[in-house]
Image 1 (cartoon, helix red, strand yellow):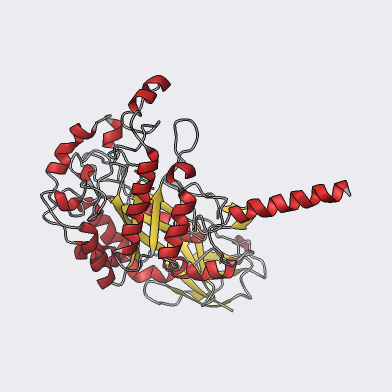
Image 2: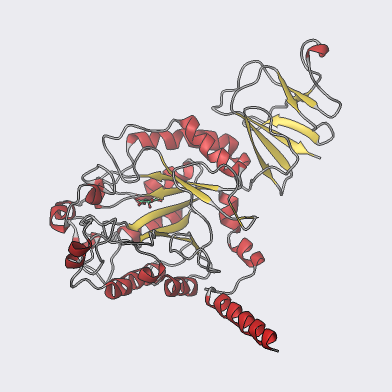
Length: 454
Ligand code: GLC
């Protein structure tokens, strides 16, 4: 009897804690459907823009140089992006093959690009004088792009945001930290944060993505309780039931607390999993070593590197969110423009190997120096040739699986043919098949063979 009642209490407790760990009710199928457009689109643009475009030396400049609000004020006073034309941004994103855009409505510096009721620290009070978010939203919609907002949970300007280990005014002394935080009230900041997210999700129509950034729980850090994440996410889901939210509000163990994970600035070795199950993911990456405009930063990735990043992400079932940091005048820097244009050229001819694609079915062997993607709807396999082979291109175990093959960029047949050369020089089994490639590499950065599977 005693054992039974212990079991009962335990079961009830489990149910109780499970019930608490739920932000909203949704079946797995419903979640898949909600994410369907995003899984299809695969490629988006991140935009980091704020006052930090003026110092032009990293969006963390306030933190790195331990600047206080007074030091930083000159950037607010001189913020006047007279060349800001979001329809130009939208056109460039679209031409690059991107399908959605996520812009920093507020970054860690606390400056708001939108006309918030709850602060004076906003674009409408700068010499520029307008709501930048409004123009951005309108421009994206006009180009048929999905609309995303990044909102920083962190705020290095707000007087109630307590100084912590990543704050510009941080200190190693707990005593001093206590002093610094006298009079700061996180409850008030939390309310401010909720109010602003409500504004963003109420005043601009349908919003497709919300990118909350970021949590760092632990000593002198901040996490879900500081942000009031559970309540926040409940509100978000209620205001915009279709919205997609990233995973940085410290709610990984809450159903509905996140929609996709966000590996940043590195390549995942394989499709990320939780409890053995593959989960939706999107990697966010910069062109160079900073998210905000950084004039003197020169570590820009090449077109080829960026394409590999995109293709490899899709080959592991993920998305790529590639960042641009516009200048203080409101334009994309020439290096960003060049790279977007180059990617666009490739995407124009090869986008079919990206949109709607995912990891290749298990059992298909990846040829050397190749990345595979696969479109389950059309049953086509895409072979990305990172190193161009010389005439013979062997696909192991594929003889019975191939119906037809062509180059994707021009639709020209790639013949299924006996290998060129003396047969005894090849190790080819009955199940293998050889594709005959032209000697000269096609005029494409990374050529793709589109294989129609049986
Ligand atoms: C980090 C940085 C931030 C950037 C973000 C993008 O969290 O703090 O500057 O916005 O990554 O993912």
